[in-house]
Length: 272
Image: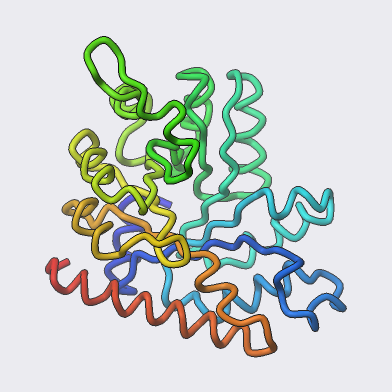
């Protein structure tokens, strides 16, 4: 998917919502466990209920690969089922030496045909650039995360008193463009989103942490907005587990619609 196509989808749906498909067999409704592929049946119902309100889906790969070959089959069926006008994010957080990264890229861009994959930048340029070799595919680079461990490394400063995450942002702009490079920026560090935006004014952000994790949608848009919206806000648990009964899909749709409604008001206020 191109940047222009993603922006058009945001305008058409009046939404910048990404639904996280973190599908846990321990949390899905019990009646689905008797089906041939409970994970896919759950995802299929969630997609049917939410596809009119979101512009992206983000399956976290860990929830699938832990089940071995059957989990990968469920993942591929899920991505194949997502409508082609909706952006797909393989949340894999890969990052390894160049030749290994090429095989990871083949996995997510050829085998799964996802539009994007999340990448950890710690090993530097040669671990990231192989993912840029695919046309109309995106790298989503971890930039500033919300977990407690982010304090271990991301805020370490150099001799010029610049934090490590800012060095990652500056350096990575040499590898990709705003047409194929996004950044993960956690919603619970709202002011940090503003700091990231100063360094990368034109790139899209993938922002997890709104809803169940306590991030504020208003704060995210106030700090992260750019002229093209520039934000994909992910919600996982708050949508897909809105109910664990047989009405789970209906409740997921209602939760997605409510969040999309808030986003539509923001887009109207921004005259977007």
